[in-house]
Length: 487
Image (cartoon, rainbow, N blue to C red):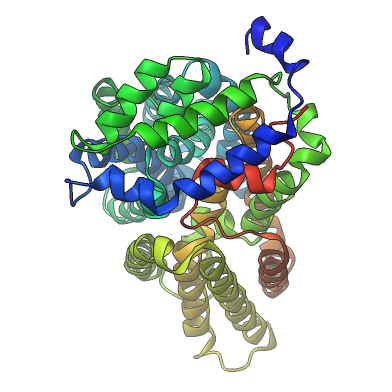
C-alpha cells in the first residue's frame, strides 16, 4: 500500500462507514443480481473462458499430486531408490508448495492475479522437464521441488481469482470447478500413468501448463485487485467484460469501490498483523479448515493409493481406476450443489463421509492383522478408500479453499492467503512424509487416526464455520471482520 494511504489510515476512525458498508451490502442483494443479468439470461462466455483458463492451473495441481502414485514402481526401479528416498519424492512436492505459499500472497497482491498464475506455470514447466530428463535421484528432487513451488502459488491464486471475478450467485459453483479440475488432473494422471513410462508422463504434465500460460494473455485481471490499486476505470471495464455487454455493473462497481476505499485508508497488515482480534475469527476458520483437511489424510491417500491397495491385498491398478470413477462424478456433483445447498451442509456431509471411509479402511487392516475374514478385508479397504475419495471430492476438497478466498478483506488477503496456504502445505508435508512410516508402524492405527480427525472436523464445522452462500465478498468480510474498516 502506498504512503498516502498509510497516512490516511490515522485519520480514518468512523464506525459509521463500516456500518454503512454492511448495510450497502445488504441492500445490494437481489436487485444487483437482477440488474447484472438483465438482458443476458445466461452466463457470459468471457466469464466461462476466463474461469477455464484459471482452472487449467488447477489441472496442473492435480496432475502433480497424482504423478507419484502410478510412477512409484518405475522410478524406484529405474533410479534404484529405497522406500525412504521415494518418500522424499512424494513429500518434497509439499516443501516446494510451502515455498510457493510464502510468496503467493505478495506476488498476487503486487503483480496481479494473472502474473502470479504465469509465474507458477514457469516453475511447473521447468520442474516437469527436470523430472522427465533426470538421470539421478537429486534431479528428480529438484524437479518435484519446482513443481511444488508452482503448486503453492496456484493453490492460493486460482480460487482467489475465481472468487473475485464471479457474481455471488455463481461464486460457489465456479470456485468448486477448481477442485473438479484438480480431481481431473489426479484421475487422468492415474489412468495415463498406468500405461505410459514415468518420463513421458512428466512431459505430458507440461501441456496444461502451456495452455494456461498462453490463455492468460486473453483474460481480464481481477476487478477487485485493480480497484485495490485505484484503477477504477480498468476495474469497471474488467467487471463489464466479465458480466456481459448488456449487464448493469454500476451497483457492483460502486460497492467494490466503497469497500476498497475504506480498507485503503488502513495500512496493509503483515502476517503478524493478522493475529489481531479483528481478524481472529476469519483466521481460525481459514487455518482450522486447512489443518483438518490435510490431517484427515487426503494427500497420503492421493500420493500412495497404489501401495495402499496392494498392502490391503487388492489390485493397485483396479483400485486406482475405481478412484477415478468416483472422484470426477462426485466433484461434479459438488459443483452443482455448492450454490444450492450451501457450504456448511456440504462440509458436514463430506466430513462425515471421510470419517466413515477412514474407519472402514482401518477396519480392513485390523481384520488383516487379526487374520480373520481375509476374503472380506481387501473389499472393505476398497470401499473405505472409495467412500473417503467420493466424500472428500464432494466438499472437503473444494470448500476450505472457497471459504479462504471469501473471508479475508482485500487489505489482508495477500498475507492471510500466504499463511493459510503455507499451513495447508506444511500439514500436507507432515502427512505425506510420515505416511509410509506410519503404515509400517500400524496400518489400522494410521487410518483410525485419520478417522478421528475427520470426526473432529464435523464438530469444527458445526460450531465455527459460517455460511457464505449467496452473499457478496464485501458482506461476508464485513460480518466476519466487523472492525476491519475501522482503526
